[in-house]
Image (cartoon, rainbow, N blue to C red):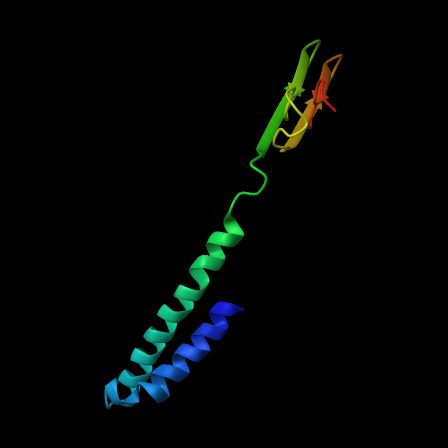
Length: 116
């Protein structure tokens, strides 16, 4: 919302306050005002984009996929294992397909040993 407001305010400023500096032709006047407003919107949006895209929690993401057939065995382990309860959490996504007598074991999430 802030970039939209900044664009509107920038367009208004360029059109009314800075009108003495703008070209005389109508098309050129709008082009310069729109360019100024676009820069103002970018200046307002850049910090917001950085803030929205920052990493939270210091964790990460683990994606594991497995296919087991015949008599095979597959074990998937993902997440934080051991350490303290303050270890960063990790998002774990595990996908598995099996057929025949195959076995798949999935262990995911935070597994803390010791401590609390």
